[in-house]
Image 1: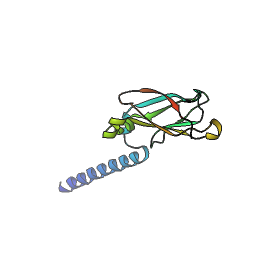
Image 2: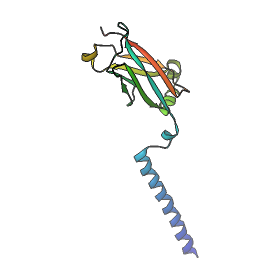
Image 3: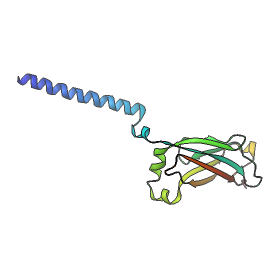
Image 4: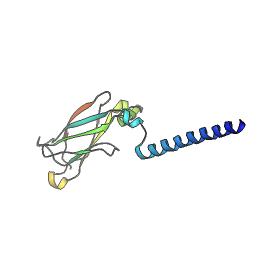
Length: 141
């Protein structure tokens, strides 16, 4: 009887360690489940020249320090999804509540469209599913 209890105890330990190993491999490959429960924010808009009022093509628009981005088309329009968990985590800091969500506008092909100064704009995306941003960029000096 005592041997059966010991065998049962070892089987339970083996089951628990196997489940832990499977969960570790899943998390290593796919990330935590926390990422999947949050919704994305769709950020779109149009970028124009402040001096000519014409659309600007080739401007990279991205949240600062993020890997997601969009590049404006010939009409100066862009759109991309930003993960909601990044947005809400950013708003947990005191400076983010005061300033907003940082959106960076970078001129990546200044030879084709003229030269425009890189601009950082803080927008409010908290509690929203879609945000539209219309931006006027200054010519680079």
